[in-house]
Image 1 (spheres, rainbow over the protein chains, first blue to last red):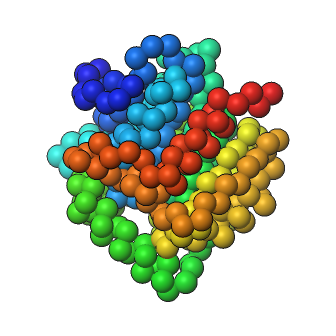
Image 2: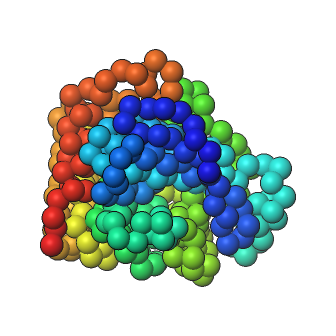
Length: 97
Length: 205
């Protein structure tokens, strides 16, 4: 996990999680400076990625809320072309369909 | 979400989604057992079709997002794995069968835009307090979809917040870098944040 930017009341972090098919799933988190009392897992919309919640996450941090958001496949840093494992998995899925 | 729960086993975890993310979350609820503490659905596309202006609005929003947000988006990724909901299914349930079902459904249903039945079924299967927020001025996703969604919810506690003069972008949600990030939230956006914070922090027991 790497620290990214300093935002008001929260610290942004970036990391990768490994999905079942070995795809590296990119995840951002915004953690309040002090105690965490609640957690929000955020799912982004079309044509954007997890950073779209950056501004809100900063506001949530004021209320001791930590925010996490993944880049869904095909968005942001997850499932990029050139990732052999992702491509093979995608092909398998398309064939299965 | 399971990864998050493992990190914070003693804390409530709320599942928040916006726009297409709402369709994904509800499709996943239809296929899988999810266990968030609360659910927050914002400006979801849960109604097929819509007026011509709404469809045009959707196109404009997608084009705008493509250039403004600098999202890395490409045709190969669009075709691959039917993207998004599959990932959510994996991370939430780690159930491969569930993941494939959701993916196939979404592909056959032309992504998230026309799969109304499973979305409404998913809504009916939410068993935790659920908050819905939608802007009355949303030209991309019809606000009536959220009203319909609210009617279909059987959650023990539910709340629908319609915000007048609010667009789909919720006054700058997709602005996440540059000078826009420094600008304070608009009054509408602040209200959305306040509603979310109150819902997340409320004692729903």
